[in-house]
Length: 596
Image (cartoon, rainbow, N blue to C red; front, top):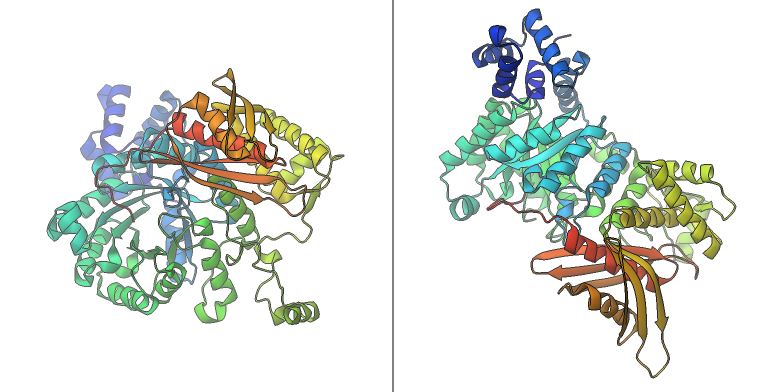
């Protein structure tokens, strides 16, 4: 097996960083930058130099396993996928999905979702935009350390600083990708970039070459591709392929295209682009006209072999193509598409529930695949048909996408081991025994209030507990007094960074009173944008899962809370939102960054 020299050099931070490190480690026998470039060109290096690299890594306190650098795992996988009918699923829930108003996630929440995406079999996880903020960099870097099966990707503009930060962020991942982009439509080039087409091509080529210093797996996106001139796209795509790009992504950034146009667009561009067979072609569709999934499927018909999508279709404006709909359309209508994915479809519903719980975006009941009504049959004729033969009215089974046949989970007599085992079955991973003990204590409290505990209860409970562990505003207790004809009164006790506060207020209703009591201390200056309550399960004993969206200036945050008492859940949700608003790290949107 041959060593992947590019990846080995990137492990030390690139050519210049490696040359400097070798100079400091062994000044008399250090390799020059010219020598290192020759290693990369030849695809090999002398044994003596390999021994020096091994010694350097040990001196830096991070010994290397050369087996991890055997040539060329990612490229071989991409080649296999291109030559067959295998579709690469690229999930961007943690990057594009997070751009939904108020959907910003903590590092811990992103890690939970990343683990679940890997469990579901997602090929590429776009973990974030590393250059957007220190918090984003940390989240991408942390995910890169723990994900081993999926490729971990960071977005970056076609700007050297962004690309280098992306490369550093994904460096720990066994399989990593840098996804760089620049706008290519006439309107974007003229008014946003203020660049000529030739300058855009030069910037794109430079970006890909810099990214190649960190990884062989480089994706290039033409922002607003579906409104770009196809001859110019063929030129820029050919140029970045020659520079080393391995995936070309064509986003419908504003959700403008329609299916038959999308298929024709991909066919024509692939035919016109030099060396188009050397890359994987990718589609990334937004849902402004409700056509994101249809356009994505049409792109596959036109030659794309990667689909960029999000869980529940989460994304800014009207959202993105939803991974669950893409995957199940390909599976159910294999007779039409003849394409396969590597997704474990039984993990679709657990993934949907996790993302919904963490982001505070409830799934609409009639949402395809993952909505509560997706497999419900109200009509007597339909019910009779399903009872006689399920395929009369069902084109797929509920179980095949992860709806449990027996949703009853645990009871008050269940022990800690049973609780831990059930969490593992649901794909819920807790980082420590301390976290498990805290969650189990909450479970026992819930079991005393609620006779039957369902899977949905456990998702809500664990998310609530993990959120509390990282928040500065914490609920302690409250009293609510309401009487017909009188203003309700709320007395609430909560802490801020360990300091306890007690506040009382009247309101037009108990919810208003709770919010006013909290604000009498917090003085946040935020306005309430959304308040919603959803029953986690059926029955009057159900937990209420409450979402609160607050806005202050341009900052929008969501807070969630869960409890069998919806007013307690309400207070928790408001305090959760305040924690994110006051203490959460805001993203610094790069000037003129654009979105794909």
